[in-house]
Image (cartoon, rainbow over all chains, first blue to last red; front, side):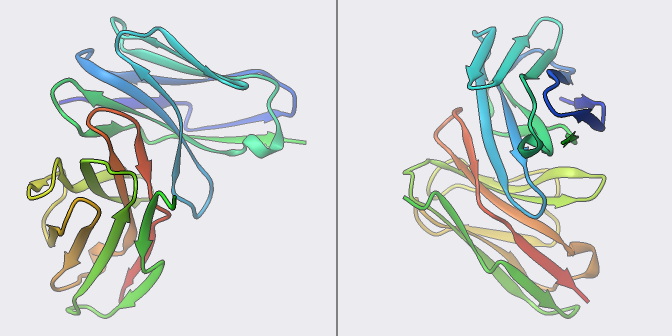
Length: 112
Length: 111
């Protein structure tokens, strides 16, 4: 059974810092991996989707990498801002399935 | 283009009451999903529908039923609500194994 782990559960950084959020998964037979952002009381917003054949994806200050063989993905946020404060979740789509398996998220706080 | 919409946004029920949560998407996606999100448990899949006319159980289907009314709409029904079903419910949709898009959620309290 696929399990997705995100460490740390919470992270607090000063504004302007570059930071890395980690995601690991137990079964490397994935089709893709997706990073989401969730603001308090809101739904999930898709940030980046990485196909299993890709190594990384970039969108603005965000860069997500994927190492399928080691079961790891990282989300890099450059020059963090208070508006980046949210919970970040990663989810993997198992090969042959259209279902996502989610990690429990990392709650990020960026202090002014 | 509204994306994924859910109604209602909030609901309070008494134990034993029934209700239906509505979800609609306007992105012509084939797959639709219902999740619940609880503190410390993360997001858990209740039911999903890979295409119009098909539905399958997810991780926590007990106490729920679903209907894929057409390609756009996917409803979740609680026949006899229990306090353990107090949660935030999210609907989502995606095109095959592509990006998944979420609705804003329904906050349900069962007294």
